[in-house]
Structures are given as structure tokens and as C-alpha cells.
Length: 624
Image (tube, rainbow, N blue to C red):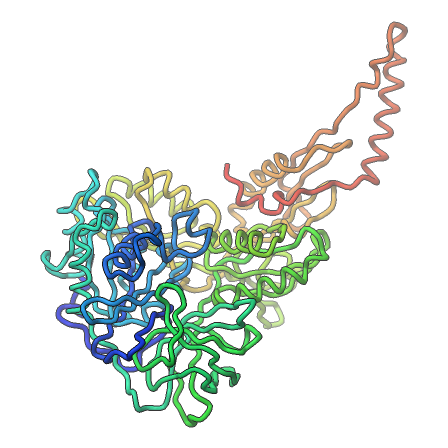
């Protein structure tokens, strides 16, 4: 594996006007000198101890009193506490040895890498946390690459050294190989017990550069995060790059040209702490009088109305969703509630995209775009919990580029949008570049899994004698459902992977339709590769047979490509024993009664309607 240290030997240069997406800050009431500010974040693979380390830093600096302390202090959502994962980046301001430290705790899952990239643009340094028992994993590599691209000073930290399974020597060698640093540069800590945490703070103060910016220049601040408060309106988290913003200042968003008032300015400590103004280099929040979610976007530049001819900050690269799914309310009367709920969620989650969708079976709904399946699951739970919605979710899919015989091109986000096959010249599907980190002994099984997913192994590197990194390419559609589960299964839980969108490639793709009792259900349609159509059709109708309840008549479940049926399962009818009252006599008496019942069943089949349960529309997520 190539060494990545050249940019990071020695001190990282201060980055001029490269501020951005930080989350919050807690404020210096008296106005601390810019040279005494340190902005940094914590990055790691999921479950390597970022939030626990943040807890110890809050304790050590006295930011939160011990009586108010709880585990995962910066994870405010119930979902984060329950699942033990960080979903939203969380900022906090601390005081340590006359220094002001602005910390951002970031998520570790690949689906939330956008949150990480926004955090990195708002700081000058990053603490890289690696689990001493698990070692370097896929998201560790991805976050290191992001930090290097942002030109940050990286401080490597080995966490969980108190565990019996910790292998400090091996993991230290992995980190040295990755960063090209010296063994002495790596800090050994136990975030659970607090061992070695004070050394982390000392290293932050001594090695991370102070923020750069010009206090006398016209005001420029970058919106790195935002959310909607039902009582206060739109609240912006900003990083001050130049100048300052004070309470009751008239502000303008440069991209949308929306104007408003800064009703309150302050920082996070970790709760909101009101201050008179935010100055150059600080991270904080602004309570605005903006009332719609479209007036202030993440990545926009905030300035004062009195300042003209200002160059906007670069902002953020717009992230494209990987996964799309239809969200429908169980009752159409709740469609407006769903629409408003998604708009409010979209303010604090800029990666979430939506557009209206209509289904003959499910009625009115929204097609939402996500960064991954975990992202989709989190949004679903938030909509159900925070807004009391009962939702029906359709099978997740990706987007496709269709070239018609007329030369026109269109993008579709679900199979039901595919035009007539006779007018299609070719269909392109998205491919991803992926990176799997696993123990050497599982390399063969992982390569076989990649091949089974129509992927190609590109490179195989060895971090050390135990750990391998496999680079591969694969169609995104084949990674959506159970690829991650299979990877965990074949590597005994040690494998991890990270991916990013590569390009779109023309493939032999077909639309797979499903019929229930002779009626085509568009919400179940899938785009699949022709070579996989038979297998997928058979497994899907088998899964549908398990979730669709029996009726009073026989129900056929069929899969078809165009007009050709390629798979079928039948759900047998409930049958009442109509001969139970007969005794003795000729057998023709029984046959006559059974024939009468059969006649009634046939009539019921013509007029009967199959009740399709909500779980049938997400049958692709049902595990084998």
C-alpha cells in the first residue's frame, strides 16, 4: 500500500479562507485572540470510539459538569443513542489552557461521508482514531484521504488500548504504513477510562495551526450545517472566514440572494450560548428570521447587506444520491404532512433529495434520494417518529441513463419510468469504485463475492502480513441490498468497505415486471441485468409468496420480461370443508357440492381484489 505521508511530514500550512462546514461552536464572551483558537474534528471508522473520546475531552476541559455527563453526549438524537452510532456532525466549544478549542464529532459510516467532508472544510486539523483491536478499516482510509485533500494536520490516535484483544504493535505498524509518520507520533489512549486523553489536547494545541482570516475584511461566513426550529425558524451553523456578524445585523445569502436578520448569534457549549457577535475564525450559530428551507442552503456564503462586490466562498461539491426509493403514506390524506416533513428534514440533511411520485396502487407519494441504505433507514425512522407517519417504502433502486433511438437521452429513477422498449437504443447504469479492507485469509472469498456481483477486482495491496486492501469496480445496483451483509458473513465480521460513484456504463439491462393475480404492479418493477433476471425473478416471487396473505381464491404471482413470463408461484386459496355435513350416500353428492364451491371460487377470482401488505413493496430488502 502506498505511503501517504509526504504532505503531512511537518506542520500543515495554514489555509487561507478555506473555512466551511463546521458545526457549531461555543463562544468566547470576552473575544479571544485569533491565534488562540484551534478548530479540529475527530474522524474514524464506525464504532472505533469517536464519540467516547469526545465525551472524555468534554470532561477533561470542564465543558460539561460531571453530574450532567452521559455517554455519547454530542449524539442528541434518540436514534443515535439507541443505535450507538453518530448520524449528524456535532460541534462543541471547549476551553483548555487559555486556548479555545472547537471540536466537531463526525459520523463513521460510509453513508454519512458527506457530513465528514463538510466538517473537514471547517477546521485546520483532524484526530484520526483507530481501534487498537480492529485496526485500519475501509472508512479509516476514506476519511484519511478526505483529510489530506483538505490539507489538514492529522494527529493519529490508537484507542481501546485497555481491551484484552488490543494489538498495539500490529495496529501501530498499520498506521505508520498508512500515514508515513513515526511510531512516536501515535498517541495511545483509552477513551473509556480516560488514559492518555490529556496528551491528545496538548497535541491539538501544539500542532494544529490557528485559523487564518482577515478581521478587517468584508464579512464572509460559510454555512456548514443548518436546521429548522418550529419556534425560532431557520438556524444556521457557520464558520466565520473574514469579518464579523453581530446580533441584529442585516445579512444576505449570496447564492439565493435571500435577506434577513441575525436575531441571535452564539456558539455551542454544547447547548446554545448566546453571544454579542461572531468574529474571524470562530464557529457558531445564527438564528435568522428566514421561514422557508430554500432561502439558506448548506455551502452558501453569508455576508452583511452593507457589503457589496464580495467573492463568495467555494462552498461544497453537490453530492449525488446513490439510492432512490418511493415513500408513500398509508393514507393519501397524509400526503401533505409527508411532503412538509421531508422539506424540514431536507434543511438539516442537504444530501436528501425528493420529487413527487404517483402510483396506481399506492397513490401519491415522494421518490427520495439517499446516500445509502442506512441513510434511507434513518430517514424512514425519523419521519415515523418525529412526524407520526405510517409509511410504505418501495424497493430501493438507483438511477439509469436511457438513450432513445431518436437520439434523445433521459434519466430515470425507477423501472416504472422506463419508456417502451422498442424506442430504446441503450441503457446505462452507474458503476462504483470500491475498496474492501479484510484479513489476508479471506481475500479469495471476497474476490469471489465481487465476481458474483458482476464486479471486477482491480488491485490488491497488503498493508502488512495480516491486512489486505482490495480495489474493485461493480454496478451500484448489485451493492444495494445484501452485499454488505454477505461481506460481513464471509469475512467473519472483519471485512469493511467504502465506495464512491465512478461512471455510467451501457449494459444489457431489462425491466422485470411482477404480476399479482394477473395485474401488473408497477411499484414492484425492477431494472436488472439480463443474465440475473431468472434468478432474481424466482427469488422475488418466492419472497412475495411469504408476505402476501392467502385469499379465498387462488392467487398467481408472476414475473415477466416484456410479454414473456419467466417465473411463477401460486398462493393456494382458503378452502372450507363443504362436505362436512354429508354422510353416507353416493360419492356424486360430494362431487356436486365441491363443484358448486369451485364455481363460486372462480367467480370470486374474477371480482376479488388482493390486499397487498406494505412489506411486499420492500421485498428486495427481505433477507434470504
